[in-house]
Structures are given as structure tokens and as C-alpha cells.
Length: 229
Image: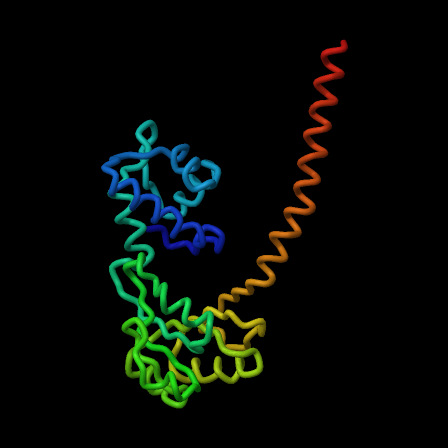
């Protein structure tokens, strides 16, 4: 593998490539071209080739990519052969939904511990996941060697909870709260703001669809002008 640091945009696309390669492998397909991958994952083929180039020569000119070899390569790259234990902090409505899902279609990660302040939840087991008191969080994170946490607590306690996660040795936080957390440089935070995502989607629908309509009008006008010449 190339030692250079790959762009974040490329890193975000790797799981997408891996999932589709698994589908191809399970269907018995032996090779695939960047064009076929492009049509399936909706990423242009030039981008796919550029993404793959960061890892060296993964394919052969005129042949394409060997599905099994490429799938195995990305499996190692994404640590699919290593189980990552994840903690869920806050077992409310969103937390319950995540426990119900629990990455059941992904082999390399599991929510293995939940934490909450509610006494009726503490000490219970939900879908195989034990729920602990937040007072036990730092200790349990260290005992269970948990590196990743999902944060779904109320906004007013988000930062103090994040501080405890850092004390517990967590290296990555998926933050579902609207608060932008302050953490040490060695801890990575991914913010997931569902409201922002929905507002962005609505903006693109309202504005980019109008641009598309204008473009289609311009094309029709051009065709009409050419036919009259």
C-alpha cells in the first residue's frame, strides 16, 4: 500500500467500494472495470481510478480489477478482519434505533456497551448489549478496550460527556448532538447533524432543480434555433 496520506473524500468512498465488491464476489463475478464500478456506486470512473491510485497498482490495463483480490485488499484496509467495539452513550429514541440496528450487516464493528442515566435502563440488556450507568463509563471503556463511541445525549451535557469519553481512552466520537465538541488532537470527531443534512437536501432540491430546468430550456432553445437555420 502507498504510504502517502489519502484525501478524506477518498477515505469516505472506500466502504462504498468495499460493499459493492462484496456483492459482486457473492454473485460469482471475477473481474470488474472502473466503468462498471462507476455505474453501480454512482462515482465517475476517473474518480475511482484516482482513488485506487493512492494504493498503488490495483488493476491491469485492458483487464480491469480482480474482484476477490480488490475486495480482500479493501477488507484489510478497512480493518474488516478486526472487530471494533463501540460504546453507545445515551439510550433514548435514537439510541434504541441504533441498538436495534447494531451494524448487523457489517462484520467489523459492534455496539458492545450502552450507557445512560435512567435507573430503569441501567442493569438491563437490550438486543444483547448491556446498559451501564454513566458513572461507570470511564471504567468500562477502559476495561472493554473501547476506542469508538456514539454520542446521542442532550446538548447541555454533550461536552462534559465527551470529556469523560476522552478520559476513558476513546479515540473516535460519532457526535449526533448539535454541539461542536472540543477534544484533544488525537481524538477524531465526526458530526452527524440530521437537521442540517435535511435542510441541505431541501436547499439542493429547491435551487439545483431550478438550474436544471433553466439548462433544459436553454438546450431546447438552441435546438430550435439550429433547426431554423
